Image 1 (cartoon, rainbow, N blue to C red):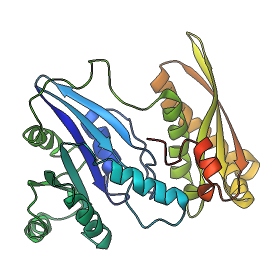
Image 2: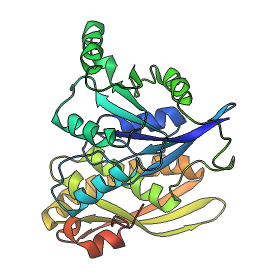
Image 3: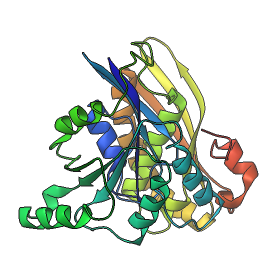
Image 4: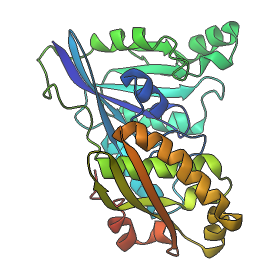
Length: 295
């Protein structure tokens, strides 16, 4: 059986988490059109009759503006340690830029097979795609160049089959009941944060983090209490909305996904707290599970 670790790397918003979800055919990682959506290394285990592949989703590598940004970059760089293959994702519509070239220089140092994955090809014409492939093949001797649309699940299955060629034939890494490294508390917090990212704009998405403070459940229902942290009082007011309208909408949309996850009725309580400059304060980053020691 072919098995191994595959790291998915790239700039923010190139579709890394969407690809992971597409491969696993389930919603494991949250997605949005905001940069910095993924803040942790998420592992998802794909398994079929002849392979077990551990995919590693990573934060988008970017120019950091605060301590949190530095931590996210560090996590992304660490994700390529001890893997068997790297998927280097680029947004086909946006093209390759300075950020992509910077990441490529970093991952080249690992001396590992690299599959260049051109995502979002459904947004460009075929002649543009052929031109891009011809252009990108001169950047580096990639093991493969693979065009896909992760959102539409186009060419994802052939990508999985190609990945298998680069993995050792060493049997299973994990037992059959292992699917991911993320906890229930992490998943709950991330679902709430995803809804905030999708329903807000400008400064709010980047200033928000969520933390599950309490969970009680029985056979029929689960009670969840989630703390939402922002770094300024004016953002707290925006997030709550007029007469609590926005935070109510966040709760309704999050509850829908969480009931599907728990397969039971969910009672979700959220409240918002201001912690000034939490993204630059090690104490709070650690309390919120976002410090350097968190993997």
